[in-house]
Image 1 (cartoon, rainbow, N blue to C red):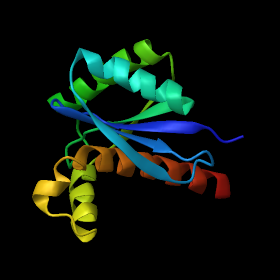
Image 2: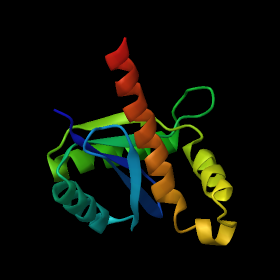
Image 3: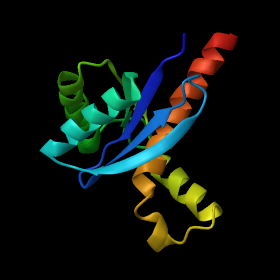
Image 4: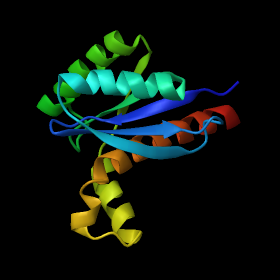
Length: 141
């Protein structure tokens, strides 16, 4: 039985949210939630409405793999999100996810101004898709 998974791109201004399909094969962008205390409530609402079984939160690492202040903030956010939702939270390396999202939106014909409101959800989609692809690979092996 496959499960719905939410993907999160944590940011200090906006938090991107994506959702998997029921088969756990494809990630789809949902929305960008303004950062702040209300973000936990909104993400919990999205998780309940979609029937999510777990949440994958992007962990920003430096290019050498080390963790800095952004990673610490993402870990703190993930812990509080787990408390709020009661769902398992998984952390996944998200290096270059925003760059990849910008490229994806540009390739889709969106200019920088239009893509700005979609970039966070697109980055969450990439984080989640990478996680789903890893699950599919593990099942093959």
